Length: 212
Ligand SMILES: [Zn+2]
Image 1 (cartoon, rainbow, N blue to C red):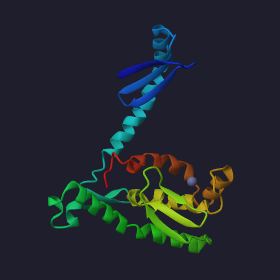
Image 2: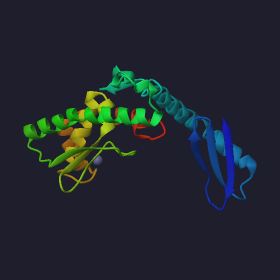
Image 3: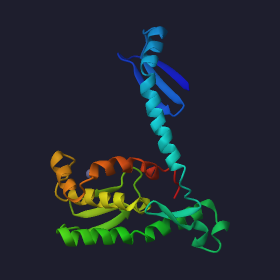
Image 4: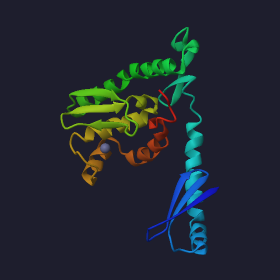
């Protein structure tokens, strides 16, 4: 474990986990090294637990091989080389483009589920479009346009359903206040579990883990 200590003009000590093997400690200029070591020791259990959790998520992300397989509902459904006879010969950039196109073409599943849900429960949505945000699974605008991240199709079905419900409930409440969650709960009683579960997949949104 690499520990980097930075002394700066500040009043309190701060410990930040940079990666699974690196921590950063920011300390007031005049604080003694003993006091800093004491602080780090007192936080040992806390950061060990955090790191364990981070490693768990990393291991989970490593189970996916996006260069080799196309995934749907959390499972590989085909090999990327099936995307074209010359696929293997293409540059990485072109491969990524083809992979992204494939996922985009699978977006119709999400559009259909949104339509079904709206027809059944009387929600109104003008448009449902895929987006490629690196931080969000979806959004809902005041003009009733819904955007769902195209990578959502990679998630298990219960999580896709949760995203759809979440965004549709924003047509009634444009915030995350208790009323909003009550509405989500009506259609998705186990939403609390799903909110936790979806965090395991947040690596999908990051540009550095997936290049397409
Ligand atoms: Zn929201």
